[in-house]
Length: 89
Image (cartoon, one colour):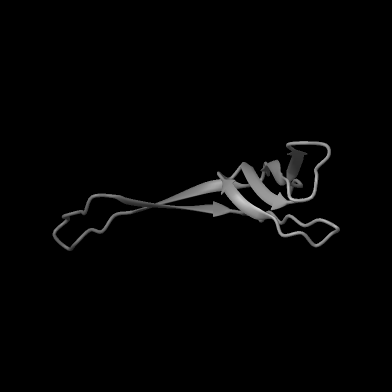
């Protein structure tokens, strides 16, 4: 299994106390694959239902953000490959 990849950037290099900090994290994993399962039900007479599909992700990723001051980072958005977190300086 390949290791996940990550890059991160802050919206500024310096902050004053009370400033809004925005952290953008881009992440991925070449091993993460979507899986689609299709289900069809057939009765004894050969009548079949319409196919129903359900999806899942194999090897999902978990993103954790901490800093050495104990600041709380709140997730503002996450689409599965780019996440935005906010905190107060």
